Image (cartoon, rainbow over all chains, first blue to last red; front, side, top):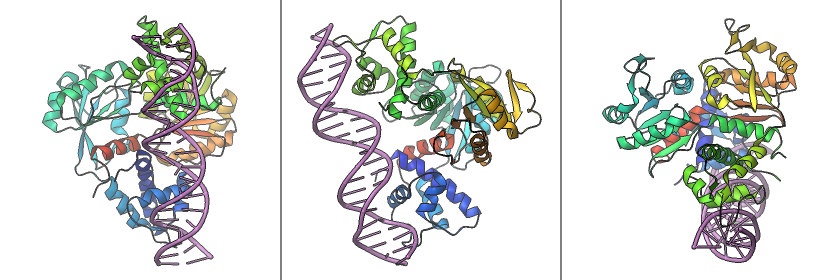
Length: 209
Length: 209
DNA sequence: ATATGTGAAGATGTTCACAGCT
DNA sequence: AGCTGTGAACATCTTCACATAT
């Protein structure tokens, strides 16, 4: 069964909430309570969870531990993903230390840059290679995922190198630009300036003039 | 007329593309060509642009300069937004220097942190205040927008301070947590770990087990 | 001939409302 | 009585198909 992207997005949030509730020693939680805490409608919570079978108890709610384990398995990976981080500027450096990147689901295994001062060094314990060697290095190291924190002008060249490697399957790009990639390569974009523009657009109350 | 969020998101992309085309001296572009370059269907491009009147020429396409000016006005702000950046860690620092933040539509006017080594200093030319003084400082400086680059555990407290100020209207949060805000305050979230989880989920091919 | 603008159809996502368990 | 699970209704977003203009 195909799970929709908005559902996956909310599953991650349910997961984080349940982690918290578990620590607090809470045993049971209702869809209404979860929704309240996350700003999501209770019916949406139930619909999302129902895709994966009857996991709650009618008249009672969801057993915190059980639901936590359940979502954990849904989100689980068959392997530990090895990730290459391309572009060790401020943003790349920030991600290296980001708490979201302390996970046993993946680890940043190689850095790539073009700056001679960085290439050949270890940064936060991760070796940095030259961008030109990317296809070779990702093959050797079994890296299937790239994170791009390079300037917009350099992003497409990085995608092209990833395609050339034939082993990279997915890319998370922070570059503020469109990217073209072949069918079968999954590209997600986090575009900070787009998010800010959207916020300001709706703050001013819609289309101007 | 209400403009939908996905449309605004694409307008920003059209705008960036047209900026490029202008520099290249291109005079005319078709919806098909724009779509090709951005990975968007031509019909979607036309639909988006049609919301704002007949701006193209049938049989010809869109006049680059004219369309650029048109979208520019749609996205324009009635004022230069003053922004407060809360949390001057790696990520905050990265955003301070981010190219997306070189804009004449807004400027980062104040920093907030709790680290005594930062409070009272100027960082990249922007004064840093203590988080506790946020309500007062944003009122004095006419700051209506906050960007949160604080740990998840601190994010809600920042929102509460923003609410207390009574002048902050919008927040862009990079914290990996849900936030509750009153009606009328606009909160956008960029959740890096959620994006990564989504990518890995669909890379492995959907729900596991 | 060619490319826009748009109503209608289609696809996707959310909410409702209530049957069915506990 | 209380809360889940879910079909149906609703809302939103995208794509199609073609009339319309250059």
